Length: 358
Image (cartoon, rainbow, N blue to C red; front, top):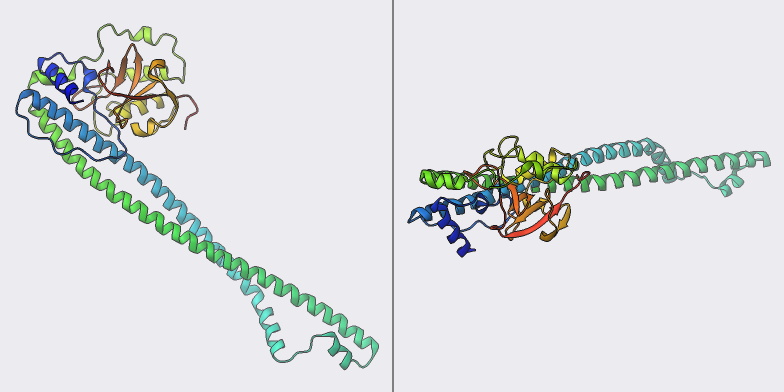
């Protein structure tokens, strides 16, 4: 990798570097940022410093994007937990009201039993003056016993429901509190990443301002490599396919690279890929690391125009394959969206997407 960069920098200073060599990643979901870069000692060092700093800033950018997505998930979970808590609280109130409805009857039964009320059949036999009175008392006793038993059963059902509702409410309350705490932790981490990113971006812009006009022109390169035939490439494209996304992406050639941008006229690398596929009805995740985990894996030897290609060991850069070893991508600061060779960038993997992805 070091030798590769050294050769690359030499070509930059000579003014003949292809844009494809300037790929620097959008899109890690995590990982430590490299140590601060030493001050440049020559023109070539200044170019390399810019490239390295751009890469680091893009890593921070994508870490912040990933943290933002995580925060949105955590906030949604917290919202769901609050909704469940509200429902559980309402269930507790309803269950307690049901308990209160049966409480008077249960209280009367308990008081009567405490005061020695006689409610059994033997007592009816002892106090009856005639067979008919005995039958009447036993019939009344049966009704009272059945009613009491029913009331007790209903009371028990109501109290069990209240206990279950209160347990669910406690669980919902704990879940809501945990979700809120997780969201707060992610939010704090996101703010730190954003602050780090702003400092890193300022350094990149400062390094860019120190480059010569020739170096800046070399970095910008050409929008299309010699011999690239867009019309022939897109002949017979299939609606809703990767080639359709490639066609949409090619309309953005020349647009500037901007950290965290997703279009419609400025992009980072994963933002460009996400935007292009969205135009044809395919919704992709925001970062390249997440994009590398959806769709169907494709080997490098089976690449077709419209497949999405990832680079570096952490899948920290992404583009759309354009055939003949070329890719469409938003590479790095100072370099517009362009079609460039991909053979000078460490290949990681490729994916093929299709209509119906969520």
